Image (cartoon, rainbow, N blue to C red; front, side, top):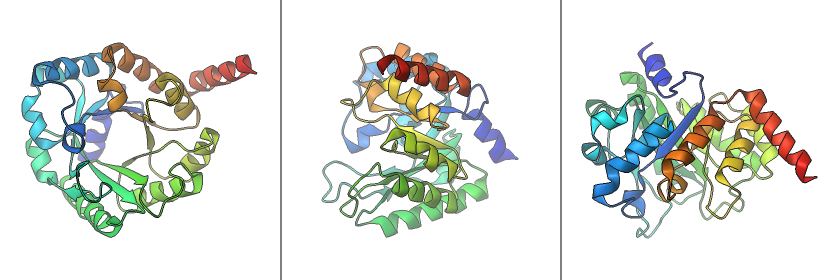
Length: 265
């Protein structure tokens, strides 16, 4: 029951749709924003309507609790940097009970399937999953086909496999790539027993709003978009637009996509 209550907090309208904004990139790539702009960024994301922020444990100290409002907090337990010999490797840097003491509503773990350290990452996911069950904490698995054994990171069959790995090892929500072609994402969703979120994708791809509509029309439960939010010159209206798409009725999403497709043909 307590896990169910925490899961409900991850969706502000409690419609089982989710817009997560990961701000954990300072470990992997360097500072997200200067120190004096951090709470402004968090405030913009919260006011824009994000359902949850994803941060590392130490960064919570820099968040003004008053700024969070109704936005949930997810503590990311995995880390790796762009300077590692193997940039696909991830290690655990926190524990579930530690995240709870910091006020987390959920935790997240990153796994790269096809990487040289896949076995260790899968073991870490299983360890965190067991702790989440013990503490009644929701687990978000960020799981991607990524590494030297992967030819196509958006292959629908491969994505269907990785989301089921997340489900079978105990995740409550899974984040992965959008399939290519995007319409094939519906098959990935149909084979997943847990809600599937998609990443924001590269800045060189289609507009973020279009990406969001495509994902939701395919049946995704939401998005987890970080870099394209915090690098935006106007993060609050961008998040507000994404939130309106994620939490719109499914029929409205589908109608919009079909209308746009018809107008281009």
